[in-house]
Image (cartoon, rainbow, N blue to C red; front, top):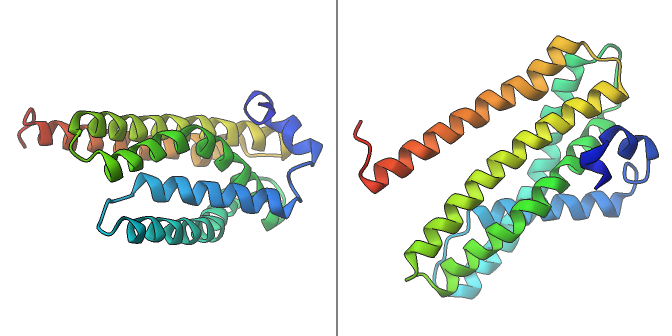
Length: 193
């Protein structure tokens, strides 16, 4: 996948930067992945899955608006000169493609187990833990990919770009991982405090 191996070549080719259908599909896939990660099995099942589809649409729109805005703010603080807001949103959206491709199958499997095999708690816990850990790992890879993209496409302020696109997300994701592991250990009865 060119987006991972050489993101600068991917963006300079221009293929995926202006295709609105491509971007809409990526954002819907990202919204669906996020919704599946938060899926709760409620009765009736059709209502649960309808709510998931609705949440996917809302997630896609909010990711495009809020995530794209935040991505542009970080670009503004990290780049010498100006960047078109749409360019930042498109880079953000294309990097969510990697997240969606890798995490979606795990999140879907977890949602299907919640729906049809709730009694299989071991499988449910394994899939839930795997989904969260893989999603955090993929987020770190996309952070690195974002930094490489910025360095190749724009005249960046190296220290600021490193902070906003790699170090800060590393700190946030590391904190989320610590909180997740502590809550998992607490739920298992191994951690008191």
